[in-house]
Amino acid sequence: MKRRTFLATTAAVGAASCLSQRSVSAAEKMKLSKGEVILFQGDSITDAGRNKNEPVANEGLGHGYPKFISESLHHDYPELDLQIHNRGISGNKVPDLDRRWQQDCLDLKPQILSILIGVNDIWHKLNGHYDGTAEVYKDGFAALLKRTREALPETTFVICEPFVLMAGTVKENEAKWFPEFTTRREYAKQVADEAGAIWVPFQTMFDEAVAKGTEPKALAGDGVHPTQEGHQLMAKTWREVVGV
Image 1 (spheres, rainbow, N blue to C red):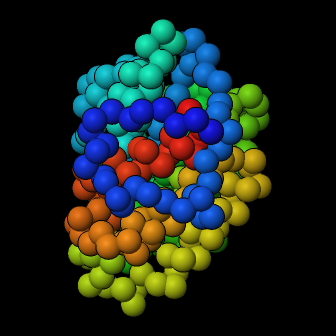
Image 2: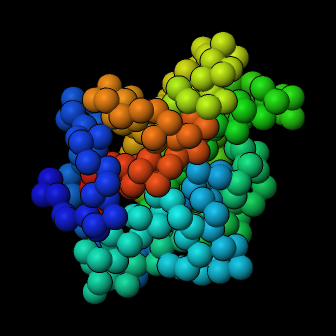
Image 3: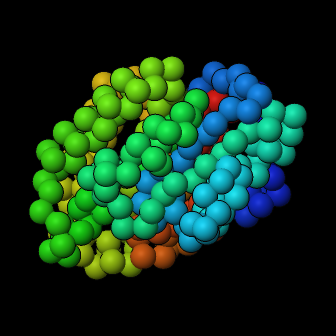
């Protein structure tokens, strides 16, 4: 795939963004259509402080990876008038997505639907505010995608791998997070495969960046929420893997 030039904001990622093609594969180039609707869904990582008073396309996208993806796509395809939405909400778990799915997804009729969900499904359980098991996460996620496919048969699904880094609260509570978080990531991949979705391996991406010398806290200070460098790396990888 011919890589397009990313905006200057991604330059800070530097060597950490050099991912091996063995583990993070670039998709064949996807053709975008004029006026195409792209929707990002998830929790606080996707929300990234977005202005919820601006729920229209290309506005209030927050300061995270959806914003960087939107900026770069509009830069590369100014003639297409892409309609990019961010409907991530901080604190959300799979059941929360399900409750607001009609208005925040199905009614928007996206051609590309990107979902990153799962960290709160375990984090809130560890904090005693939720009792959903890994199997509840898997079954609920699968049911959500089945419902979506029935309503939007032509939509391209992009499922992003839930991730954590060994920093902050995750490092401090490693014995509680693992191995259950690994199981939940595996379930997310299983659900994505069964739904015929494009899989964006964010955990692999971050693991490779750390292996190349980037400090985990430079990518996610608390181990969960990415820094600007982390979000820029996510945006770059998302575009490469999705093929846009």
